[in-house]
Image 1 (cartoon, helix red, strand yellow):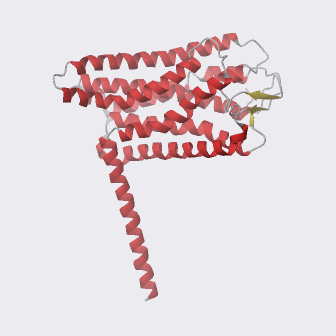
Image 2 (image 1 turned 90 degrees about the horizontal axis):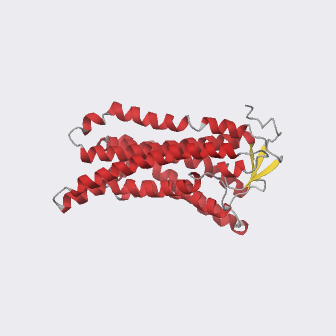
Image 3 (image 1 turned 90 degrees about the vertical axis):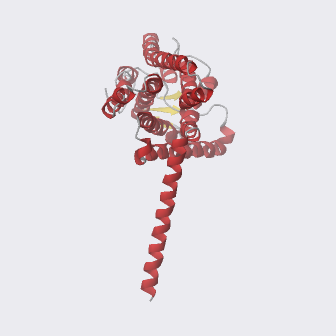
Length: 331
């Protein structure tokens, strides 16, 4: 496969249509999406940093949370910078190689995130329902292998469909992708050949990844709910549920939008509707993840406060040293 262009049709680049019916507000949209992107990066980088730096967060739950934030950073960075550059450019083009690369990494990172969310639900199930065996079942080595499996598990299934899309014949030299990135449905609609089998393959793979991980998540939380309801004290039940609510909020947002977009036999649908739902997975969920986990978790909030205090103290110490050094020079 030649990534410099599709040899069967001579296509070397696509045009990204971008945001539908909002051409008059490009400046405002650029500012909003840039702010969202910067907040997303800041929040998720803080989560990764505090999980790695604070010994109180050296547990499986926060290890997986750090991995989730890494995935969110990469997922948004695959899509948003190109989208922002198109707001500032008259030519909304993307090269064939960049389009296929964007396609691959978007679905690879998305699939890995689904697998990781399922693993996080199993982690909560083991912590609540099997607390005595939990340290052994979720040891550091086990967590590392499981996290690696999530990343590799997203990497491999997307490879075949990506190659298939890259080899499709496209009818127009300057084909317009009706989206703000190279998504599956808009790309398949541009092919000048029957893509029904490829759509069915995409549907099967999406169903396997999304529905199977959702089933694991649902089963884990079903067992958690049964175990928590057996706890005699209301304070005990509330404490047990509080460790799960953040994850449930993220799962609801991510799975709901993904099932709407990809778990259906046909990739057709309203451009405006698909665009709006994609914004949830690309912008809203990555932005809310660090705030949901940080604001609802006392350990994370305490760790963030300690990290901020250390940064401020370190900065203050550097200023004092610089001031003392300057005074010595002056005297």
